[in-house]
Image (cartoon, rainbow, N blue to C red):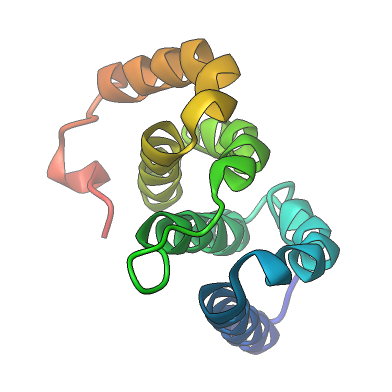
Amino acid sequence: ERDTEALEWEEDLVEQVEYAMCRMYEHHGEAFLPSLDQLLPWFSERLQDIDPAQQRLSVNLFDDLLELGSAGVGGTPLPCHGLASRFAASLIQCSRSDDPDLRQAAIYGVGLCAQHGGQSFTPFIDDAVNTLSFAASTPNARSEDFEAG
């Protein structure tokens, strides 16, 4: 079992790495994508963790990168079509989580993929709609007890 203090330290470190990655993408755009390719496998592995907090760290990174890509730099959008197609399946999977915070973050990411992914999101439409329908119809989906915090 993981030591709570060590887990908190790891989460802080991952959040700092996430912040740095987002700033590099924000300031260097497409030139940063090859470096991003080197770091994404580690974040993708976190999605397999049984701890929703670990999964949420990766989902938050994906959401942040998609947001930055759509907002762009100086009014010029950064390339996020490729990111949307890379993240969509994982975000859809996490949208089925029992953890309300993870589910909310993942559903938000699915929305970003749909909004900014262009044609690269098309293969994911059916899964996304089915997952969103499932999430909306789960027992207590509208209960304050299951509201993301």
